[in-house]
Image 1 (cartoon, rainbow, N blue to C red):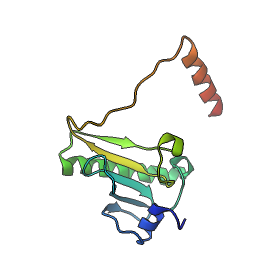
Image 2: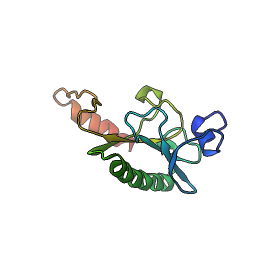
Image 3: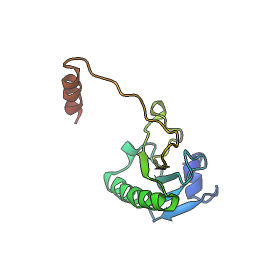
Amino acid sequence: MQSCIFCKIVGGEIPSAKVYETDKVLAFLDISPVSKGHALVIPRQHFATAMDVPDELLQEIIVVVKKVAKAVMEATGAGGVNLALSNHEIAGQTVPHAHFHVIPRHAGDGLRHWPQGKYAEGEMKGYAEKIKAQL
């Protein structure tokens, strides 16, 4: 997909700080990092969301995510790492090319997690049944 910024990175049209690559997967540093060392792991082939990626390729991608996460933690001295994946704009996906974020975490870095809610009495079971019906 020519207009996709990640496809342009894959094609070498836009420079990037690559940290790992295979013939199917590319990992590079995010140009707008949450913290220094924040990496992105993408399939080289264009897929809009992770749900569009074929299962076999998604398995390869998650293995690279694991490898990159370990390297990011070691290289940055992070005490932990967040692995993030957003699918569709409403969920915060800003580039419509499937990608995992590997974000190194340090004590006191200020990054906060989303608020947690609660289910009303019996509501959880209803959602579980609706989800199961779609599987």
